[in-house]
Image 1 (tube, helix red, strand yellow):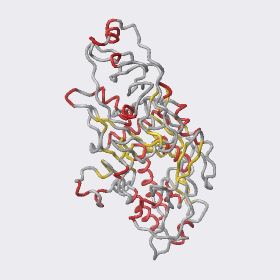
Image 2 (tube, helix red, strand yellow):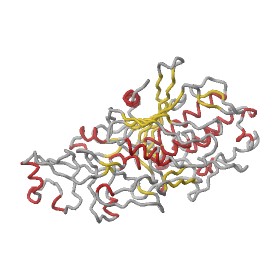
Image 3 (cartoon, helix red, strand yellow):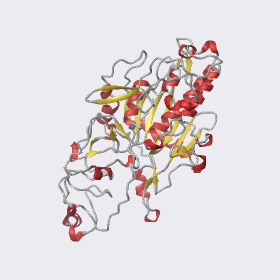
Length: 489
């Protein structure tokens, strides 16, 4: 019906058709891509129509001090998160069409009053150009795979860890160059150390202090053997939970634990993309606001990863098995296991391709600072941001209406208010009719109360902390305004 390569090609071609704004500079900047694809089966179930309904790029996160309780800034601009938020925007418009009596590509009336469900033969799959950061990206290296960081010594301090033991997709890497007589067994530009090496055993351009380099140069058939090592993630274990042992090789990381994305200087409060995909596999991708209108959650039927370092067992652990013991879910929710696949097509704007096209006149390679969001909506489908706000704005405009991303919490909330206003009062879902009237402000759609004021957390322990997700609680009949959005979405 469809193949991983067909999905990857569809997403890459869609990205290539977008305007230049927000795209990385060729040969100097790199980025990651993710997308949500709508699959629609034909009536005879012999063919499937594939449509990109949301696409995102990005590699950045903002630190805790830059977050806004008004919901007007994007905290997490990793491609996977951008794509999912764009999908929520798309689903909101599709519901708006449905409640207004127009045709919807996605929804049809459900069993309950005011409830809608996904049409038969319609499903969604998720594509990401690289293995999601966090738990899914921790797995043993095989063959001559390049490690984007040095194997750690037995006694490595926090400062050396902070200096960059990270995956390409999660940190800004310093450009490294090889001299004419420089060869390594994996032909990668990153220098490596063995677990018990000292400074003079680092493979460098200085032959006078490095006999290993001469062995490589004059005896090309002699292969250097390194101890087994891991692909590592820059995402840090959540505070007050299990920590990484930081031991050499395969013992560097703990697996199956919650992680937060790394920041530039200060830590973020954004969970890794592996953790978020795990949450979506239980609570769905629609969010708590749209759940008022839906008969059940919407899950991804499959997750496809582009060409690059990938391990099926690690993906299964991160997205399936570590969630298998979650209990006490609300009615209609379940532990959904998406099909996990990898494509053989590589994203031409990833770090590897950018490195191959790089010239010395371009300066060092760095991640693109912009994040692109595109979704299949009728108005303003394209949204380009930097540092959580719309790209190109002056500092004076920060915090204003013009600075808001169209997929920010506050804008998605206003889209939901328009959906509610377009719904006949008699056709409102029961959860909204209980608290809403035409003369009162919209009440809290999500009751959030955790320490940071952003959510009530439900933790399930499977080999310590495994999955963290938003657990919808009974609503209280209180009113709120858009200024309260930090506690709404």
